[in-house]
Length: 256
Image (cartoon, rainbow, N blue to C red; front, side):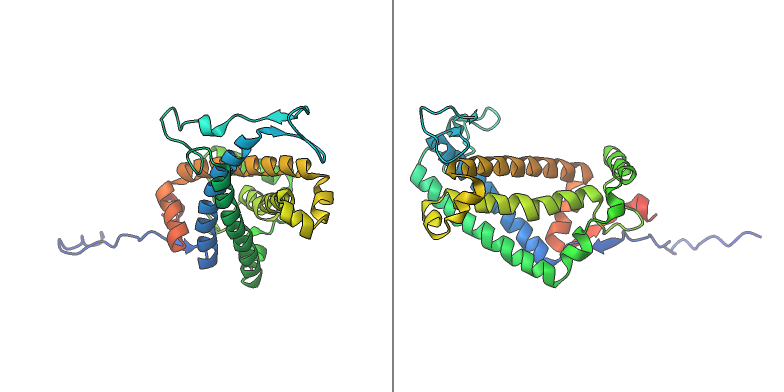
């Protein structure tokens, strides 16, 4: 015996998309402040680099020394061939670039400190970024790599959790790259050398600190490029909305 057909005015309920709360308020605020801050720091750092675009190791380095790397003049660059500068300011002004750089370096440093304290207090680090030993096994990393290649970036059984590559990259940026960039930048500042002379010993000289600062900035730039590419591949609307509202919508195939 067949079930009676639904009445014409009877509506069949449509399953609503399931969402998970993925990003706390503190994480979202810090994310957007840091995104703006690093953008300004990279742009102003390019102008500062143009004053002497050569990198050395050790305590000393000048025009007649052999650099390990010579950088291009960034204020001569355009954006994708357009007449639009990517530096801050858009013209060469060392004094103005240093003001921008110092101001936003303070924002970056104190913002990171507050975020770390907050994330320890609400257990964000322990809950979301702690890397388990099983996640570092070659088989687990290979499976995660294959999932990324297939554009699957989350676990359907636990969609709110970070995958192992996310944990490793985020932890590397928060606990390694950003602190190295901050402290190597402090070591370059003459005023900080007088207050904290151990900074120069930590980096084995001012020129070494300058080189380390550039390497950290380059790695941060690479992280941002890869991060933005993955956001686009994962679905930019859903990803950006989750970083604005905190709620991430689970793809329909995972809860259909």
